[in-house]
Length: 226
Image 1 (cartoon, rainbow, N blue to C red):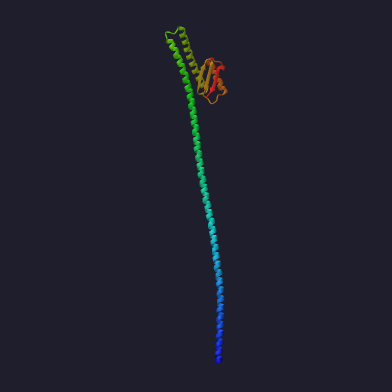
Image 2: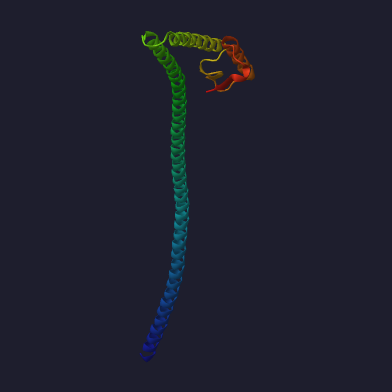
């Protein structure tokens, strides 16, 4: 009996040792698997983070590209707008300059027209007043006959002068000069011609006309342009 109990105890101890060894082996194996699983998870997580970084980097680059495109587009739009504004301002400036030039030319033309018309009117009015004065002398019974003779002579001279002036101005126009006005003061004769510039040939033509029609000396003829 003692021998049987002893054997049972030995078997129990051996079984207990085997169980303990199996548990330890399971624990060791479980620990290895846990580490490997942990490593795999860490690798997966790291790979996932890596992929996420790559994706975010591309997205950032794409966003930056899109932003640069938008900025470039906006800058181009701004430049186009600026160019349009510059062209508009330039166009408006050209229009204003042309308008000012046209107004200046029109004003100058008007002033020149008025000069020749008013000068002729003033001159003819003066001659008319002189003739009227001499005619009053002729009508006055209290004026001596010799004074009346002088008045008649002056009236004739004035009319002759007016006719000569008219002939000369018309002849000057036939030479291609659009307008002119002639003033006589004693022996001095002034001729103003409408022209931007007078060539020497034109000056000679005017001198010949005045000298021939008015029996004037070349030195007494003074020509200018306006």
